[in-house]
Image (cartoon, rainbow, N blue to C red; front, side):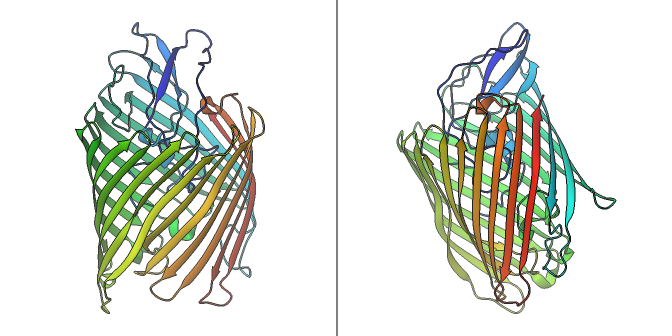
Length: 461
């Protein structure tokens, strides 16, 4: 969701005074600075004389994101989508329908001691330069939440995001190219929200992202979402999703058809409760790997007793059936996606996340693994310009083939933001260190370690 404040830009933009609002990341996505989910805020109407204006993101915390499902793995640029809450400096024209363009550039230079994430006897060091132009176009006022009166907002909107990434290995004449594309169009008013979304994302292993090989695949994701307020405090929602996953090992290519239904009640301004169900079918291109069908019965809780503390969870039971040879019995298990946010002080924020889910493997063909992912994400401001972040993830994967993986990850960063207000930041520089280890308890000599150190510059124009 993109919440924006608007000011004229005929001369230098005047800073807008506002109350500080907590922010935090989802614990899984590594981007410059903590980019979090947003909750509705008031919107100043744009000038009606057709003048150019600049929009600035107003950030506050929405504890629950109803668009996320348990089968979604985090992707690098998801937080740059309008309805995910990240809106950079944007220039445009005000009129009956606002037209806004955001242009940015992210560049990263890093050294890694294991570029291909292989065992110690095969690892190779490399220095890599990445550059990612960011192009974003919004028509209308992107919104991601049913938030009451929409004075000053357009009901209809369309948002386009394109992020190509170029990778250059400085030690060898090697270059790679990946890209991310997102298109989202929707309609939001006081009682309903309709969203159509198309996403295409490529991810390669040899990059500055601190991710597991199980998360490196090309993704095509198309979804349709509908929300409707039955009463002022009761919301009904439904979502349908199609995903196509393509991996280096073509035998693991698969298609996924997923449905999601939910009913949410606002018990009080601080407490929301819901029930839901997710169900899906996973079909492999290779017939020998068969297919999988699953159903989930879920409870959704969003509790924010204070502005400095919040808890949300999407927890339930999953039943998964397998159609393949040799036959496999139905699997029943607990699934959850939960997080706790705590703003310790004006300068320090902590978000702790837990995810337990069953996921088909892209490494072990046709296998299913149970993933337990847990860790805190901490940010601290030393001054208005300088900050530090620390993200720790401990991942345990239990495969039905008997394979056992243990993956701890660590990312430390010291950052500089050009603007005094971290929520209105055009320029961001980070010095970072990342460490990633994978230990296989079922195979001797299969342990992998990788350390990376580098600098990342992000600039929005």
